[in-house]
Image 1 (cartoon, rainbow, N blue to C red):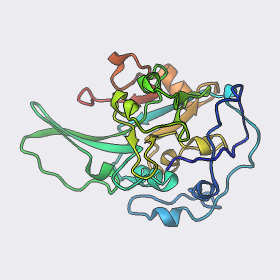
Image 2 (cartoon, helix red, strand yellow):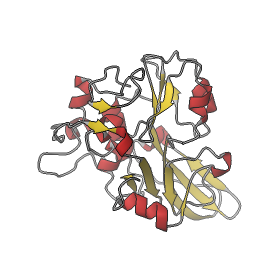
Image 3 (cartoon, rainbow, N blue to C red):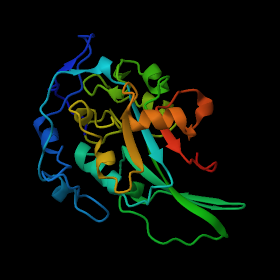
Amino acid sequence: MAPKSNALPVLQSDPARPSPGVGRRRFLADALRLSGGALVLLAGGSAAEALAAVQAPHPEAYRWDEHLYAYLIDTTKCIGCGSCVRACAAENQVPDGFYRTWIERYVVGMEQTHVESPNGGKDGFGPIQVGFTATKSFFVPKMCNHCRATPCVQVCPVGASYRTKDGVVMVDGERCIGCAYCVQACPFGSRFISPVTHTAEKCTWCYHRVTKGLRPACVEVCPTGARQFGDLKREDDPVRRAIAQDRVEVLQGHLLTEPQCYYLHLDKEVR
């Protein structure tokens, strides 16, 4: 569930725009890293057990003009364990049956392709049989692409959807009227109307965490490093280096929305 309070010490130039914050319940839910640094919430793990303790860095003044975030997914590393989906649900109180991030399994043959995402991949994936000769199979994590030229912001009639200076597309739950225009406009299917708040919700890259120096929950728990989160304003950032030097792709690039979620080794069958 999207936070309603504005507790973060975000320094921003637009006083009319409330800084995305985090309430006490959200703060308690930040616990994805044990005090010893070991991670839990791997395949089959309990989200409640994972959220046992918080070791967040000391909150210092955050300047959003000093960062520019991007996300990188290596599809060859995803094993479809569902840890990321479970972590996201626990971290953000995502209602059952809705997903801020999800995993799709592609089973590809020479003439047919089967795509599925049972429960958003939250429970992992079991064995599958398809009615054709499969030549390859792989998993593809998906989420909001935090586009620079995002249609969801453009269609919002009340200005509830906006993009921060550090490159994160957000929804102001206090302004959102639940008209769902943004849900229809998103070409990636990454938004939904919450049955709890009746407002639009989506991935925020765990903005309440990254503004504290933490990584998004889905990145934190990924056991294979398939998901990476980086800052394009840091010259030594691995994500920045990968985007600059490797062959990366984006989903539906022909739409010219300039997604900031990049993929390594993206198969042509992925849509």
